[in-house]
Amino acid sequence: MGVKRRPSTFVLKVNPILCDGFGHCAELAPELVNVDEWGYPIIRQEPTKINNAGAYESAKYAVRGCPRQALQIEKITDAQP
Amino acid sequence: MLALTSPYFWYTTRATGMVALILFTIVVTMGTLVANRVGGTYVGRFEINELHRSLSIVAMLFLVIHILSTVLDSYVSTGLISAIAPFTSSYRRLPVAIGTIAFDLMLCVWVSSLLKVRIKNSSWRFIHWFSWLAFASAAAHSFLTGSDSHKPWGLAVIGLCVLVVALAGLWRFFGRPVRAAGRTALSPLARAPLAKTSNSRPASSQKVVRRR
Image 1 (cartoon, one colour):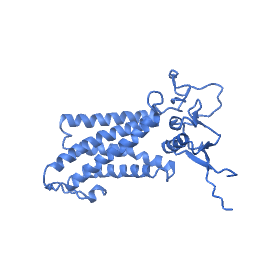
Image 2 (tube, each protein chain N blue to C red):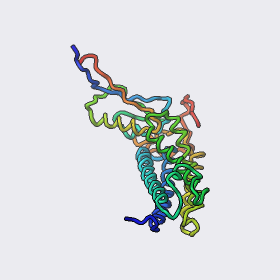
Image 3 (cartoon, chains in turn orange, red):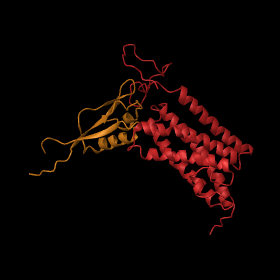
């Protein structure tokens, strides 16, 4: 059975080598990103629903707004549809 | 139909050149604000970054108008090739060439920023350093060949622009914070008073601070 599975959740991933702690992601996606005391991001590890439009938009803004291009959105497809 | 010999092209060139220089001063200074992690409490850091990006497009627009009106002006024998290739203008060869070099460098910076998601970030950063050279060339160009550069107000504007960017450069070089120190809007440190030194950190921390 060819059941088309679409990703239903996502997590924001940071490349810690590129990140320089500008803190733009925490401002652009406050529901997903916090900063530690040195200004580096602490990102929500639990997958977020893609249909949570506000969070998904914020994540896209954070990816676009990162001065080091250190962020990316990783979409997750559930095991069972 | 506009006559190509009318002085309006010259007026346009003068005006847009001056405005472009001022705009590039603001763009370079705002870029320094972003790099030095300014903002986070009253104005967002991302907002300064967005303003830096948007204003750079406006500045490039003024620069393109400045170049086009120079090319179209039939009084000066500066062709379309001279917009890209330096030392091809028979009119004021050296000052125009310096302006051409500034435009080429700005094009590099602009195109690399448009392709930012496709190129390596280290390449983008390297090319972005060109903007300092581009501004220096632009300032030299405006001083050497600007029609208003020998009037007190013109000299004052150019001098002020150079001074602002020179201070920004010094600040960029000496004043870069070791780390963001968590001073973004959401940080618990956001409302805390500023530490005396930017590299103060808890003694318990074993984290090695990278300094560039």
